[in-house]
Length: 235
Image 1 (tube, helix red, strand yellow):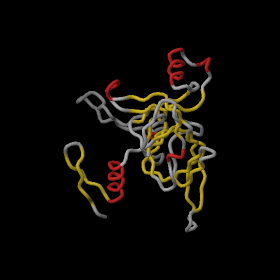
Image 2 (spheres, rainbow, N blue to C red; image 1 turned 180 degrees about the horizontal axis):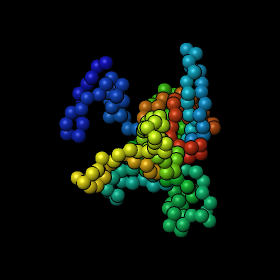
Image 3 (cartoon, rainbow, N blue to C red; image 1 turned 90 degrees about the vertical axis):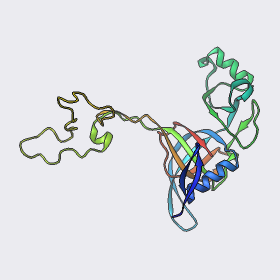
């Protein structure tokens, strides 16, 4: 595998061929993004007869609810709104915000800092911005697991068999390593606690199918979150 050195943040870093291609394309052309919902997983067969696991995403249509500029806001970005929201559940400031874009209240608002084309207030972004073969990054919120022990949360193996008289330490964390010195538990110690419910990004998922009429995208592999949860796609 070939390794290439590229400038990054005032220094140089190394990339393999696949990451170098993505880096070059990202610098060559601005990217696009869209908001969607996870529908579920399925599988399809490719031309070689391989069964590929994939995820179906309902993406858009999204409305441009705000366009931020360097002069007014200090940075350039486009705010998209997705999914209808009842007007009675919308605050008065947000009602005015959506009225400027001449659209109904939206449940999910996300900012994107770059787009392939210039967008204006009230424009609609659909899955037409994506094509089969594109690679996307998908951001979602992983499923919440509640309070979990170290075996499920961190993959601890436990203490093994019930031997030498012990009977209730199979899934215990074991020693934390703190004695008279330093008399405390070090920060970052892997212990039991709340698991899941985190923002997770999955990179370089390939767009396998685009169904523009149904606002559906089929991407390879799995994405974080439960069915019906919001996801953010960045090309």
